[in-house]
Every structure is written in C-alpha cells, then in structure tokens.
Image 1: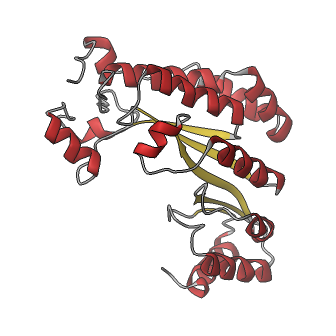
Image 2: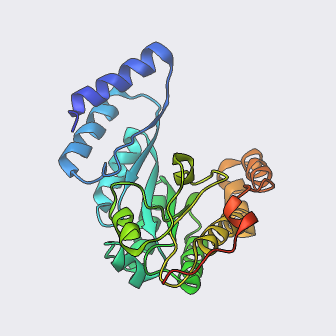
Image 3: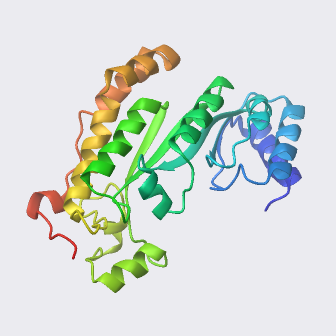
Length: 253
C-alpha cells in the first residue's frame, strides 16, 4: 500500500497546482485496512480541501463509525460489490453476506451523506433467469444513486477462465470480446442459461433500472433535473450486440 502521506501529498499538489477536485481511488479493497483508511481521512480533513472522491468498499468491511470521517475527508461515493440478489449465487461467488446486511450497509452509507454505486453481475456460475431477476429486483429496491450492471466474464487468469476451459465453453475470439460494452461482447454461459440469455438480460436490466420512475425521481431530487435528463438521454441508446443479432446461443452442458 502507498503510505497515507504519499496519497495525501499527491492530492494536495493536484488540487493546489491544477484545481483537481474529483478523484477515483482504484484500489478495490480500499475500505479494508481501517488504520490506513482513517490515516488518509485525517490528513485530508487537515487539508480542508473541497473534494469529490470515489472509492470502492465491501459490504463486510464498511463500519458505521468510519463513515462520518470518510464524508468529512471528501468521499462522496462508495462503490459496493453486491453482485447478486440471490444468497445462493453470492455464496458461490464467495460473497457471504445476507440481504439484510446489504440493505443495512447501503442505508448507513447514504445516511452519512455518501452516495452509493451498486455493482451487480449477471451470469455467475449458479445463475438462472430467476436468480438474475432477483438481482435486478434487489437493485431496484436499494435504488442506489448509480448502478453498474455486468455480465460474468471469464477474464484470462481468473478462476472463471479455468472453469470455462474445463467445461469447453466458448470464450471471446479477440480481446474486444472481453469488453462489457463491445459489439462482440462474449460473457460466460451458466449450467442453466446461454451466454446470449445472460447478455440479453444484462442489457434489459440496465434499461429497466435507469428508466424506473422511482430511480429517476430520486436522481432529480438529489442531483437536479439536468442529471435526470442526461440519464433519460443515455437510455435512448442501445448497444449493438453480435451475440444477440446472429445467434441464440447453445445451452451449457
């Protein structure tokens, strides 16, 4: 890990010399080592800059007593790896926390004045259409300020890649096929549904979430009508997908 002094010194320089206020911490385990995180927060609070910081956290590492200090330090967004609305599917992805844990953590973060980005994955190994629907319904219930919707992807070197090779499942033919938004995006199938079914559901889930009236009303209230209109324009665009245009997919065996 980089030392708190090094992190804060860099932010201070960027802020003072270039006027940079917005930062993303790309460490996916940032809110894990409490002593390290709080040391960064204390030093940022001492600076007194008006910052807008985006960082990752986990449901099982967010502690309520840390949230006030994170907010004072300039953390405005925390991204949570919720992954699935099915406890069975989450267990298979080594995410052992309950629905109640998820709801409580999201509410505590928002109560501290920090916005939440919910990250969700469709097509995890135990997924079927019902469990993916449960994931979408949980996302709509939580109504986080933003949501990322991903298809499970067998990135080379990952356990999912080894599993796909073992099962003989089709993998992307070129690197662009590993991109979530590419024309040739090729996610994994599961034991119960095809890759095309996973991708179709992911794309439909994205639109359903971001056109949901409850979500749009919340966005207008918290961020203004201009932001709501931007999201409404975003959902008018659909991603062209070769997998959905040219094939129905073959069920995994």
